[in-house]
Length: 552
Image (tube, rainbow, N blue to C red; front, side):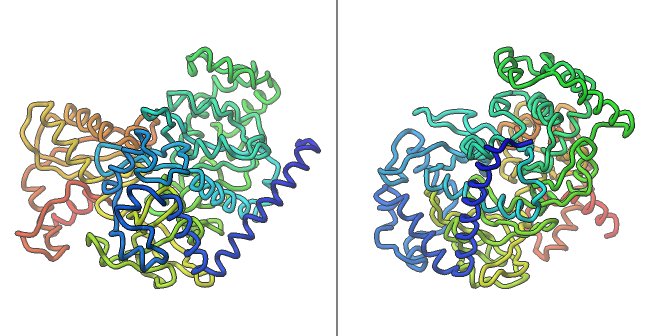
């Protein structure tokens, strides 16, 4: 039970969160004023930088001014300025008064990862978005207040720049800098993020969690929640022994100093071990649905993530699921307000937003629309200008307008723009696939192959490469390894077991030729214009297309 001191501290934290939510509600009531303020804040962050001088940002005051001064930019357009910033040249991209807390890393379209500057204002905006999201959740689920939280975040300092600035997951920074009263209810300890092996990390978090009265579990990726539950069940014999003895198994966590630091927070709980053993015997396995009284879980539910909802319910029960919103290393886009819905209202204070209509998304410099100019039922790609130093940045997440809160659109995430596949958040691009296959063929000493890759649904999901006859096993290993080199997030999800190894299926040339014919017919193009995609983005789309070829 929380102490009276914790209850008083939580009350003050709750009052502060209510003020934050009140500001959010006021921002929704005057979207144009909120967007003007977001633009001013973003321009202040880059004021006086080489980037600002390059685009004459000193004379920019409105969104129309910005559109005239700066073209739409990708990360690759911004990379030269970020690279100089990473080397310590602050004024390449930012105002001399700005301080970079860390660089949030994410997969880019090339083998080089993206490094998003986390400035003090950006960290404030990111935290405000999470606090707004969290308060609405607790207002809707008051039984979760002052109860333990299973929260899973990455490490914010996986690597460092030449100047010693941390690079990693912004969620790690948010967790470490959260208010002390909130951190008090996290079941895990910050040191858990230092465990290199993903399975050991998941086990340790669940080792701390199974002895607590967890109210809800929250992490962006539902595949992570599923892996947490599965690992605890698979290692249940070890887990019960550790709970009984107050220990952390050295065969799982083999880093001695780290394990000792973590064990200092544990104590023997033989009664809880007996309760868990009885649950396992009665239910046939250990499930969070049985050993916790959960009020809800929070994770992504839109786009391809919807495929995880049934397995999630199998482990955690049919509890409400709140989407955590469209957010990326580059910033937050939406804040969900309801359970069991993939939608969220645009976070009009997080950035100055522009939107590219679906039919214009493939153009290099299409016209953009403001938030109030969108239409219900239509699809748009997101562009943002924010306090991370990202100006007219093509986030290229595609959203659909599902409704309105006043003049503010309610959006549902659909998919990444372009030929990008993201089954468990890996954001794999066609360019990365092509580069990986080319590298694998070179290493194996084989000529160029006709191929097409598609994601497949399984436990865990994986990618399948359909190609002309070859040594399938050798090619599978080589392409998978090359994809890990090309894409940090693919490598992370392979290492954690959330994504399975790429497999190769050999087909004769007539099958692939028939697939090409099917695609040409469906797209209405001429043979001269047709180029076979290296990556299909729909789950099992290769089988769907091959089935269609048999009907032609």
